[in-house]
Image 1: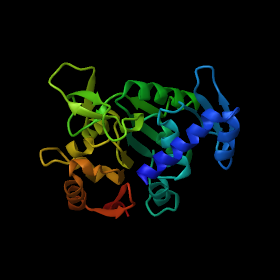
Image 2: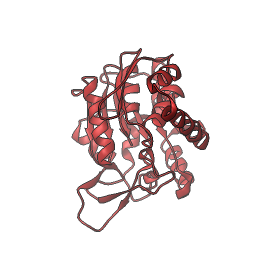
Image 3: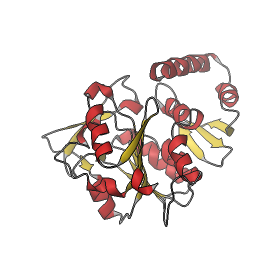
Image 4: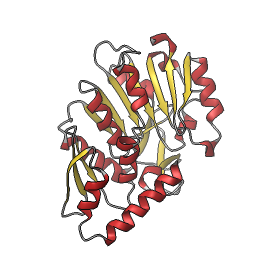
Length: 273
């Protein structure tokens, strides 16, 4: 699915370059969910969705349209959303979402559209992705409820990190982080500290797509007590780092029922069912 998605999207963008009006092609491609598309002077596309959501997409070779397809066409996060929309899981008070690996914010926008009264913490380490994330939040006037955090999610806070752009296809959606001994402007933050800082009672949805850095989250030396406060986790486990068994064991040990969804794993905390 990962490779086929890239191949299909590249074919689309090659066709885009040949079309006299790329807006026509994009409008046809996204006609079911997009109301209007325009290309701005800086080359990015501004898309107004039929749901009312507005978002900016950088053109190829950026991966924004690839992420858009995953989130809004393939609806990668519909499964976890449905647990609450169908009342399988209940939420009392403010609905809280942590979007770790927020990229340019499409998942945060998708979930905000489903849960308009939610508070979302959108965590993204990369400078350029983070800039787009801020713009997409502002385009929808979500500044008071979707909070961009330029850090990387790890098992503990304050670790110096560097971004690496040679993972998988090397595009914007595959940026990962590595620990560094050098002084860095990029630091880690833990879920424990996020819960304390934002005074979170429960995390309704914890989305984790952090390009392999999930291997640092579930080790034995980390404090995993926060899992008692998490109702659902949807995580993409990158098998290049051989951490699937560790993560599955840690979640199962903390009362999560696990469902394999292909590229993602859905964890449901049985104590909230």
